[in-house]
Amino acid sequence: MSIETKTSEKGPKPKGRGISHLLAALMAIPAAVLLMRGALTEDGAFAASIYGSCLISLFAVSAVYHVPMWRPRPRALLRRVDRSMIYIFIAGTYTPICISLADSIWVGLLPTVWTAAGIGIAFTLLGQNWPRYVTATPYVVLGWGAVMVLPALWAQYGAAVFWLMCAGGIPYTVGAIIYAKRWPNPYPRYFGYHEIFHFLVIVAAVLHYLVVYFVLTQPVLVDATV
Image (cartoon, rainbow, N blue to C red; front, side, top):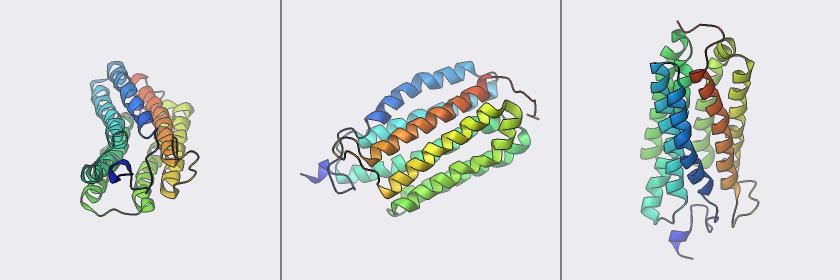
């Protein structure tokens, strides 16, 4: 088999690679429009546009990278872009959630998250090919930084939003572990460990989309936004 049909995993690419994220990218378009049209405020609509753009871009870039058979040079470039999009999506998910909370929370947290994402992107684009556990760990750490907003989410939007936010972090974390360990790998020719990772990303993104939808389109239970 020629090198164009192989991945960095030293084997033929599973036939299902990237298909789930291609479908997710298509579904993300109307989902983003729904958010922007349903937002209660102009700030919310703007935050929804940022989040929606990041959501679509995450899955679209992943599909562009994973579905076709690329030659080594463009494949290496697309791999870096694909990994960089994860940082952008994490920061993009923080954006509408933070905007919906008190100024005292998001004014400090949101710039910090985007700065951290920018640093991660720089290391990803300009650095060497790090081991998988090294590349996966910053995603998990940056994502779970959201624990800082969990008390405010509970106070303003109730237990359901709180638990949806927590639940969304679990598939991301499990997926990162599977990605780093490359296990389980049930059907390497069709649906391997990477496909499980992609599926878990979709599950987590759906859960956090519900959080974003709720905080942007529903009135707060307790007004603490000032």
